[in-house]
Length: 196
Image (cartoon, rainbow, N blue to C red; front, side):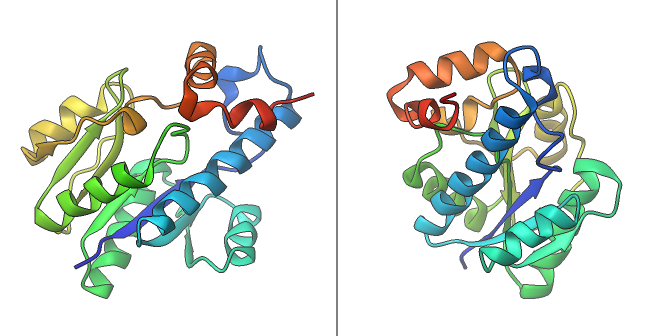
């Protein structure tokens, strides 16, 4: 069965705080919107239903404008957002993927690989800095533990398959991440978003 692809989205105006020294608030907002839209389009192009877990009403309205199902985050952060998404997938009888919207190099083929992995069992896609860019599977009640070094904790809890793909490995957290992404052929689109 095709997994539900859940994307937790922070408030657009507050995201990417670690880029504040390099991008204006307006640029960070535009970047967050562009990344979210591209992630949704990539997942949909892979044939997956997308669920947005919205941090606020603006994000919920953005999802509605794109005709995407959404649920409101219960003010308990990324772990809570992930649990809410898994419960929504369980209600539909579907496996699930929790994917993040700060993956500028993500491709349709990589999302398809993740969907196949989630349908078969637990999988985890690490980011280069030890985080977890995507995690998925068929099971309810997974003990999410996001934050620095989350990949190690998630791997120990799941013993799932590790899915190493470039598009999941590079997430935009630090200025160097943005620089690397823009220089990669897959990330050339970011130059248009950040043009003054």
